[in-house]
Image (cartoon, rainbow, N blue to C red; front, side):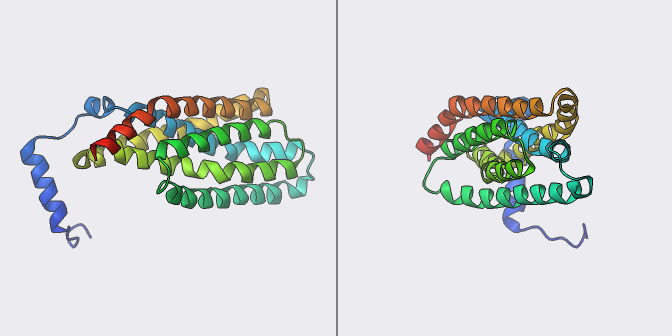
Length: 223
């Protein structure tokens, strides 16, 4: 397959131009790009919060008094509902950014998820928890989409492949540490784990509001 693949001539020409121009950005140059580190933080927070629900949902359903034989089915319904809501959220976000700045929609999504995570800690039944999880999913599915879209706006076209690799690494770190830390917090208090998500999402909201508006506005003026 490697030998049969034929790359488009435009990509081949761009790669040759990057090699001859010497404009390749190093890692520290990518990190020094205005708005890039805040994007890493937002991706970490968004992925951390999303992945934390996987180990926490069955624990909550079991603690809410569900019959032992129904824990698996109720957990599956809640997980599926959240995933479907997140899918819808990502689609709607891609339409909203046509009329509103990426950073503004991202701030709304992060703040709504922070409020929803705090409310999850206050739920008492599996039904309440499931409905709140779907409501949170209507916003958290757009976080990664919007963050990667902002990444495309702050990184030069010639260096986007390397930059997206770094951004994805930040998201994967959040995905890796989330189940472990969420499990540790749940061992102390299940509701504490949801409050931790809320605190992280509040921090992500502040980062997006304070540091991401400027780079996008500069990019729009430049264009």
